[in-house]
Image (tube, rainbow, N blue to C red; front, side, top):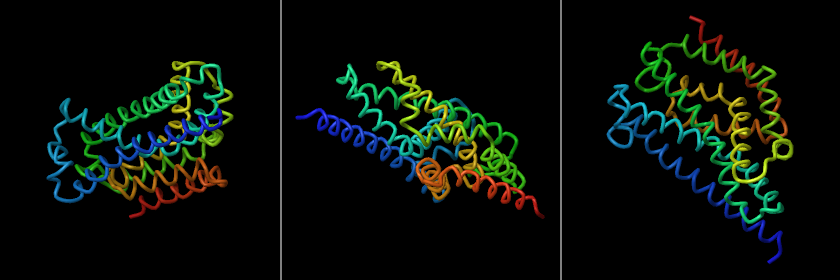
Length: 254
C-alpha cells in the first residue's frame, strides 16, 4: 500500500469518525428540540424544572456544548482532514490519528468554554426576565439589541481577521504548526479561538429565535458554512451585518 493510499485511508477514517460525532450531537439535539416545542414530556422534560441549581446549570451547559459541537464541527472538518494529510507526511506519521483527535479536542474545548459563558448569560437573562422559559427573548427590544450587536460585530475588523483565518486552513496550519500531540491540541485551541472570534455574535442570535429552535440552529450552521467556504463568504458576512442591523432597528419600531 502506497503512502498516498494510507493517507487517504486515514482521512476516510477520520471523516467517518467526525460524521459519527456530528450525527450523535444531532441525535440528541433534534428529539429534545422537537419535544420542547411539543408536549415537553420526553427528552426536554428536565427543562420544566426551571430552578437554576447545579444540576440544571450542568444540563444547560451540556445542551449548549452539544449544540455548538453539532453546529461547528462540520465547518472545521475540512481543516482537520487537511491537517491529517500533512501529519501523515511528517516524521511522526504514525500518530496522525492521535494528533487529529487532539486538535479536535482543542477546538471543542474552546466552544465548551463559550457554552459555559452562554449558560451563565442565559442564567442572568432569565433572572432579569429578558428571556422566556422557552429560551427566547421576551420583548422585541431585547431581540433588537442582540440583532444590532451581532450586525455591528459582523462589520468589525476583528470579525474580518478571524473569518480570513477560518477561510484559509492551509495558511493557518503553516503559520501555527506545532509538533506532537500536545502541539496539535494547541493548534486546535488556536483555531477554535479564531472560529469563536468569527462566530460568537451569530450564536447569540439563538436567544432571538429560540435557543432550541431547529430552524434557527440549521440556518446559523448553513450561514457559517457559507461564510467559511463560499467564494463570496467574506462579502456575505458584511451583507449579513447590514441586514441584521436593519432588522434590529425594525424591531424597535412600535
